[in-house]
Amino acid sequence: MKEQKQIGLLARLNERMSLWMLMAFGQLVVIVLLIFLCIGVNQPPKTIVTPPDMRRSFWIEGEKMDPSYMADMAKYFASDLLTYSPDNAAGNFENVLKYVDPSLNNALRRQLMTDLEDIRSKSRSSVFWIKQIKVEKDTVYVMGIKRDMMSGAVIADSIKGYKFRFVMKNRLVVTGFEEIKGMMQGGIEEWMRLEQGASATEQSNEAVEGSKP
Image (tube, rainbow, N blue to C red; front, side, top):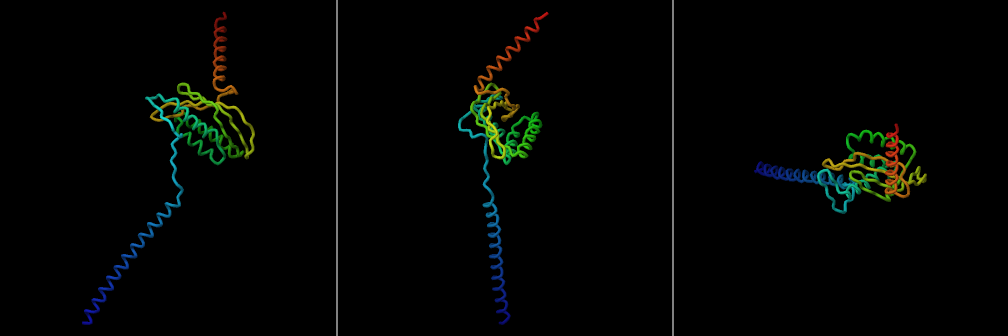
């Protein structure tokens, strides 16, 4: 009789032990899940930005692009390249380099990294306000006011012009970026007229030189 009671008692103890172990395991699982949940909550939110903020439709046909799309992309690139501070310049430049044609990437990267060293060593920053933009074939001309600063103090405001060249290779690719020399208050149209006049004069002078005996 006693043996049967002891066996029954041991059976009940085993059942309770099994139940406690099961409850402990369940609590452990809950704790682990809570730990992962807390880690996920403490992480900063992930924001995916597609440049630029497209609020209008545009078309792409083969290697041809809607001029409005090219203009929007030029604004986006101009903002990254020309509006910067020592803290964000590296990230801005890398954003643009992702879109640069591989044949030009290394040269532009060297130029931008040189600029970056100067920006950091002299605590330089810049803001660029676009005033005019013009699209011609695969080239976008941008004109605006560039404010250069050092350690927060304004150094100068100057009229600047830049041009971007694009091509469509399954996605938009930057094939050229350079400053326009001689940009003036009159803007892009005036600069183009002067450039065309200078080119015509140069061709005329070459023709005269060629006709001389």
